[in-house]
Amino acid sequence: MATLNNAATQLLLYLLQNGKEISSRDEILLNVFQHNGARATDANLNQHISFLRKAITSTGHPAELIVTIPRMGFRMGDANINIQLLEEAQAPTRIAHVASTPSKKKRNRWPVAITALITGIAVVATAWLTWIPNEIAMTDAAILRTIDYEQCRVHILGNALTDTITEKKALDIFKSVGINPDCSHPKDLYLNTWASNHNLVEWSFAAECGLNLGYYHCISQYRHHEE
Image (cartoon, rainbow, N blue to C red):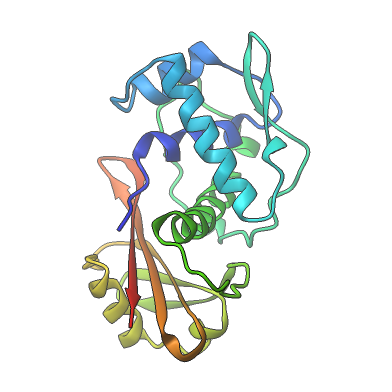
């Protein structure tokens, strides 16, 4: 099991919101780390930048997607994240408190960040949590389809195993990793599974995202099983 900490999530969202504009270290430490109760130090910021770059490279994108500006801060690079954009009509508009209100153009980038981050975390966690002697072929994850359950939108991340996932199967997988989503109010749920040949090794990934106290938060869990 592994859970992404809130500071890493908010850091990537903040950088994506600012795009190619330089986010100074002081701004990041104040608006991301201090605001979210994380340790606001340069060392902690560097550690989270390193983690995000590893997640990005694991999805096949260059680490230079996050550019370091010496003695100033960070900005997003020229590379594009080829991730399916969620419908903006379903996206909450408040994510994290910042000193100034971002423009509409910047604010609309956050669904890309959520999907990219979840995809990256799923791949990174698979590599970090376990080591398998024989390489298991795994395809890149992208949203294959979306199904509705009560007030939840369940986004199925696509690969061979998820083609036939039903509503009941999706809920069973969520429960197996320890997430029991409350769909009495709007939420976004994400789901993906992997398996080796003959199903000797299996992984399940699930994430529950929604508004909490006015901010958009995600909780993700992983389950690893070997015969």
